Length: 198
Image (cartoon, rainbow, N blue to C red):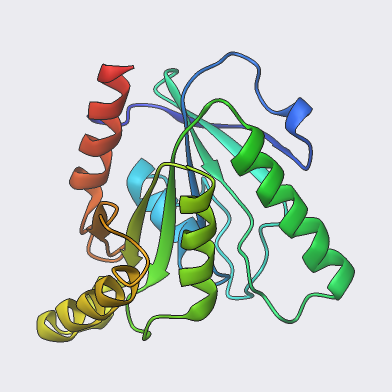
């Protein structure tokens, strides 16, 4: 699949304000500063589509982007950003949970993980929660260009070992680099294959 059009549709904090046209939605989520906006811009080849920021935790809303007039790419707020006040953390947690659990159009959730770090409890717990709730998801390791090949493989394997303590079968795993455009074709092909089967 090639993306020929990508346009911002709406930002909001309420499910009832999300688009009502029943197109499939592919949502991206991860801890703050994981490189989510950069990945979205890389996938769409539009550096201005999702706002990138050096300040973690800038995405506080559900952002819908219409791709090829056929499906939505959804940018969700990052989780686990400690600098936020407790009230705002709770609001974002509720926003994320409501979207993930109640949005019928959600077709697949891409959980972004910075490949440079050892397995983080917050990510593992989040994926466990997705599994308990039967949410279809795939794992996307970001910033793959920041590690030499062997170290990347080592870190991915470490995550797999942790996940296999809870899971009988692992979700699909992608490695990406927004800088080098790595993983773009694989991710878009995966989305395209799902769309063709809907």
